[in-house]
Amino acid sequence: MKKKPLLFQLLLYSYGVIIILLIIAGLAYYHTSSNIIKHETERNTQNTIQQSSQFIDSYVQHLEETSTSLASNTSFLNSSNKEQITLAFKTILETNSDLKTITYISKDGKIITTDNSVNLSTSKDMMKEDWYRKAIGKKAMPILLPAHMQNKEKMTDWVISITQEVQNTNHENQGVLKIDLSYRSIAQTLSLIHISEPTRRTP
Image 1 (cartoon, helix red, strand yellow):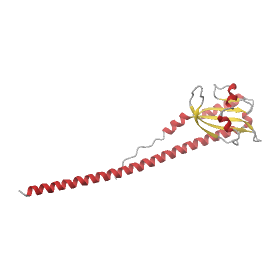
Image 2 (tube, one colour):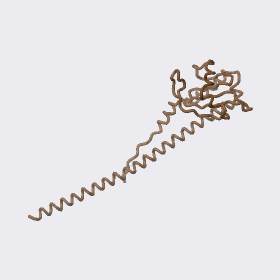
Image 3 (cartoon, helix red, strand yellow):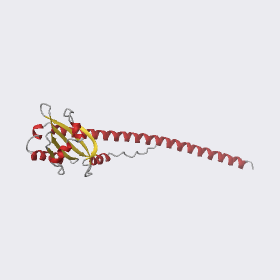
Image 4 (tube, helix red, strand yellow):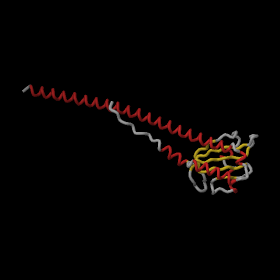
């Protein structure tokens, strides 16, 4: 009669030890798996940030090169052939679908733009804009403007702009060039750079 209680106690003890070991093993597995997932998530996030940064830097550099190339051609921008200049602007837009508008305003108020909604009467108003004033006196260096509404009155799309002062060979101001880039296009491109789901590994 004494063997059964002893046997029962041994079995109970054995089951208890097994359950404790299973709990410890489960916790260890969970802790190890969590660390692996955490490290993979951090690595993937860093890679995504780096890829996004490289993309933006590369794109901004391309825009600045395009702006500088146009701004350095002073004689062309200030020629009397407005149709030819507009055609050149439109050709640039056709080769890069992310670009929305190219506008040039000379110091005497002449305006050349690919935006059909803009007319000559608005050129003097544009010369009072912050983006125009910021470009003046920056040694003809391209300036990146943060995202803003392209036309506040018409509530058109958000854009990111590159502005640059146009100077002649004597470094005298001739006007300002502005290139508008679709903010939505950039956002859509960046959204394609996903943070990949971490793959769970068996420790």
